[in-house]
Amino acid sequence: MESIPDHKTPILVVDDDVGLLLSIETILVSSGVPEPALVSDSRRVMELIRKHRFHLVLLDLIMPHIGGLELLKQLKEEFPDIECIIVTAIDEASTAVQAIKLGAFDYLVKPIDKDKMIIVINNALERYSLRHGLAPIEKSKPFSELKTRSAFKHMVAEDENMARVFHQAETAAASDYNLIITGETGTGKGMLAKIIHRLSHRSNGPFVPVNISASSKALFEDDFFGHTKGAYTGALAEKKGFFEAAQEGTLFLDEIGELEPELQVKLLQVIEDKQVYRLGSTKLRKIDARIIAATNRDIKEEIINHRFREDLFFRLNMFHIHIPPLRKRKKDIIPLSRHFLNIYAQKNQKNIDSLDLDLIDRLMNYPFPGNVRELENIIASAVLLENGRKLTSFAAQNLKRFPQPGRTQIHKILSLAEVEKQQIFLALKATGGNRTQAAKILGIGLRTLRRKLNQYGNAKPRPE
Image 1 (tube, rainbow, N blue to C red):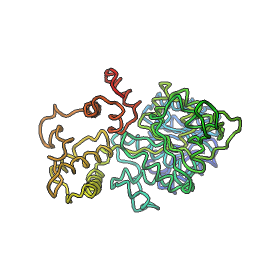
Image 2 (cartoon, one colour):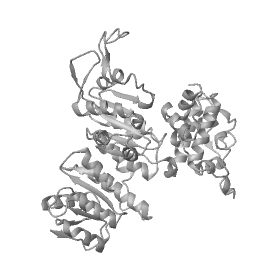
Image 3 (cartoon, rainbow, N blue to C red):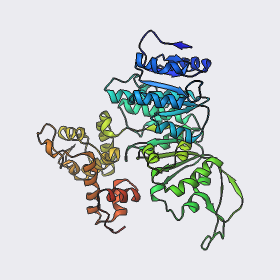
Image 4 (cartoon, one colour):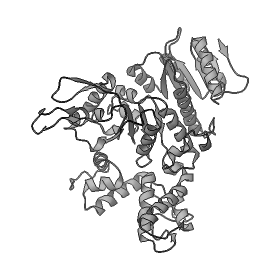
């Protein structure tokens, strides 16, 4: 079978199963995605791509003549900019990792989940569009089409990028998949995880948040699996671990990228077996908890550099949501600023009801390396210093060292990495070098702070 739409399409689907090709076509068209081109003979793929220059190719893994991985390799060698998604009936992490190492954007397992396929395809098309400076293929659904808009009331947002995140969260909540939320520090990953839990069928169960960077390596098994009375000296009573505490609910693993490789194996085993032994016990306990993990790292890069297990990643990454940084959703800056102004003006019993125009300009031109959390801190501290009815840039001390918009002092503009570095050093200075306190102020884990200081060549021991 070979079907090429009369109009130009960005998508080619390759599978020797004609029935599946037609099924995928129906799903895509009914979901508002452009009608795809279809081909069942893998030998025709490269010629079709040379002729039509598709943006995205869905490749079946196992096909006669030329297999999916071999075709992926050929395609990436000749057209490295085209995005590829592998479709496979084999749910094996090694196959998925091999595909990603060859350049695949992602992979889907048969039987294909409709919602996940649409999200993965839209993400791949968006990445292609961003790389090539094109307009997005499909406009995100608006906020008005959310089924549960009120569930997101505490995540103030007006930018279209966040509308897409909210729609993805609704889709994720309807399933029981484990998922990973990615995004820079301070973007609201933990808040989104709570919303997904509340919208899910597990909402009556517990939501158990665990900050991996703050957990002790020595106490990992005790913390996650629990112990029986007398399991070791000092174990005076039995204790539930995090997995049992999250029974019939959600276990939120924040900063999952900080987990030591040897501990990743233990976490993987529980996810696969869905059961644990408490320390000191031979009784198996069944686990029924959904896992939502979050990280500010590029996990795929961590896998390539052997710092994160690929099999654990694919057990967690059944669904993926990325929250864009605040600098890429500028429409949210002022609504968020007003939101935080209202909160902290009330808390401090101050009659401040608006933002000064100069402050608005400064906020709109600030890079926000700490994202929403940093914006909240800026507004909170400015409210304390402000004596008038309007919040001014004079009160926003954290913005003073950045040049005003319109000035020609280009040489003074700092890179985001340098801004982050300066913020870390300022926090350390403010805490007298206490890394633990500095990490809390910055909203990052102590382990993350240590790693960044090592990157800056400033690993000199300081009080913790």
